[in-house]
Image (cartoon, rainbow, N blue to C red; front, side, top):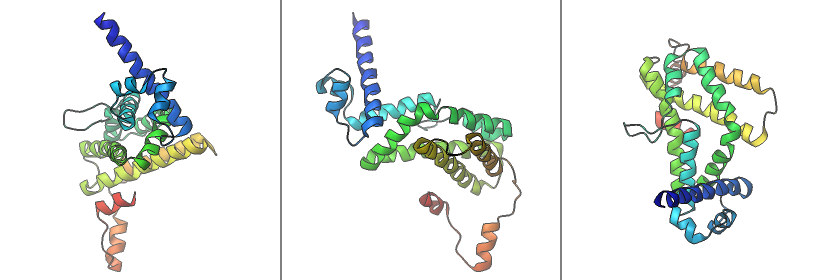
Length: 232
């Protein structure tokens, strides 16, 4: 009997998550109330609050589901999530490995689109969720920087900057696709992204620091990593 009750409780929780995601995707996070979610799930607000402390708490659970889809697992060293596949692809630095990771990620865009758009929508109006989404993005950047650290590739001071640039290229292309679909050749866009990641993360390790030289010649202060992160 206890097992049956536990199974029913889990089923209700999953139904609340499923219906909430559908409503967030259809109406937007801001326009969806707890009452809407409970009604769509065929239950009551009392039952909703038995599973989630708030709408934002439910959104956190959806981000947890997103991590499962993307195979991002918690780590013993304190990271909320990490993709060992991404770390490995960057560390190895082969075109095949980086291409496979990026193409696999793009293949999941249809599945993760409602999660991403809902999380971004929620982040606009909920400071706690905004911080959570920002932290999630930072963890992906950390994965890239960790791969470069493990490979010992590039100047250590540039590794996180390279992660920021690589992530923002991927993020920009994914968000554009989520808004508009492919308005040109999708394979071509992904091929360009792969080439750009190869240049940033695997090739040209001995390329001269042209921006630093240019700033020095003109007497312009050097940007810090904080400046880079603020810009993005």
